[in-house]
Image 1 (tube, rainbow, N blue to C red):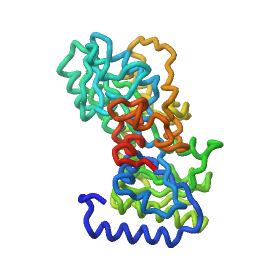
Image 2: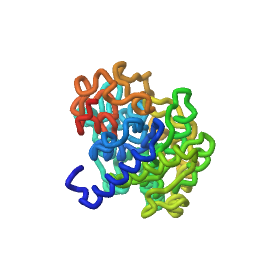
Image 3: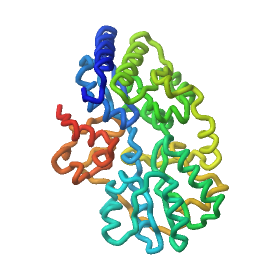
Image 4: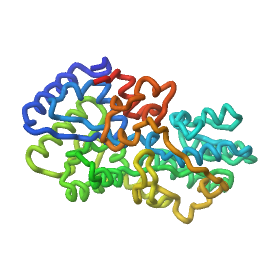
Length: 362
């Protein structure tokens, strides 16, 4: 483990790993739903410390990775408009479209800027009244409160030149889609602690009951993840299918009610296309009718041609949890962080990036 982890935490993590070995009697597939957790698992080598019959599966928990090719193409077309400042989080700039990415668009003259918060884009709109400022609204539930706040601030200040390109996605519908798929082999989920800090975990309870699949909310440190795995295995071995909270220092069942209220004021659930996966009903957030004027997808008249993914990229299978990055014939050769074919190699939360960074080759 890295020097960032205290000796006491290492001792406790090793003890939890020994307990996992002691209680495991059957093979289990456990999916971590968050890309940040995937990177922690690879960094700490937790998958190599587990018994062989525990298989950690990397799910679609990277919002950059699952942003559809169609939305990326829409972003590129908007960014190339002469009167537009296109603002985005930095990890979206290298996500490939059908022929280029936002870095490529900037090289061709598009005014594409990296921001660290949606409010940075609002500030750009104030400072550039002659320009249309568009924020690329990407992320799971964790980013949505700040995006909602930016829309409310723009409304209050009558910023008619500010809009967002909605691309946010939701975790529970993705879990439902995975578990209802004929190819599903997942026995338990590790839920993302930061998402649950906002939304709570009450939405997961019907999923656990319907599919008889334990869901354990956990964090991102080695000990957090080890405890989440142990709690999942204990449920599976005991024939229990519940939602448990291994991240109680930050997460409650109800979540942050103030943030949820703001989200519900500005957004509503909509169907969303997931890159490499397909359409998942009510798995995204679109603007409510009272805020439709801030929707860049309707503000700009864009005609998109048919788009296709790279034929040799298996990102869709990786995101569905039916393949691992090393199963891809392009991994580490034709596809690298410097020359990514698919979004999971681009993002700091992508499974392919994690395998490449931590030299996971077997």
